[in-house]
Image (cartoon, rainbow, N blue to C red):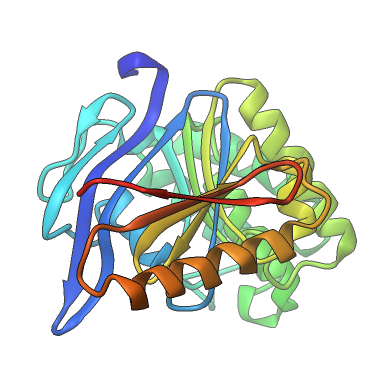
Length: 267
């Protein structure tokens, strides 16, 4: 990996018609780091993740995955990347085990290795009791676990996870937290989005706030009230946008004390 980076986005922008979904974002994930991004619905988090995975091409900017440049969605590193960004499970009719097995084969595992990796991932997510049931019959929480089992196959070097704790019960959330920490401990870089501020505080090394397609600041995982600090950042970004329509973006950084500092940043 170049410079110890698992993922790097440099000046990435994306428009859909007249809507700017992502606007000049610079973001990186170091090997062994859990980097969380938080934002309101429509802030651009999911679009950023799809760009990082080659699912959508940026209009401007560059993406590097595990040291390899991403061009036209192609990258030599995809076999070492796990992700969860779309519907939790793409194939409702196969069993939970079969879904994970298909994911392993698509990731480039041999037939024998895929069977072993799928079995290990099913056990890791504590899905053994449901492994041979059709996926559409499972609870939403267990479908999410199936998707996570696919993402964690074979100890990936980069994980990109959009709301991995979505629909999970408390025990599932604790399990996911433990798995992410274990993966980071092995050197996996992890980009994760979440609206569970308490979970983010427990697991993240860095927290970046995205609003209206821009990075507007960062939060300290050890802060006393992340949700309050988050909304201060969002409101400050809106005020700055109103005051300087079309001008340089404002970066607002939350400190451990909860104070908000505003810095004009050049274009």
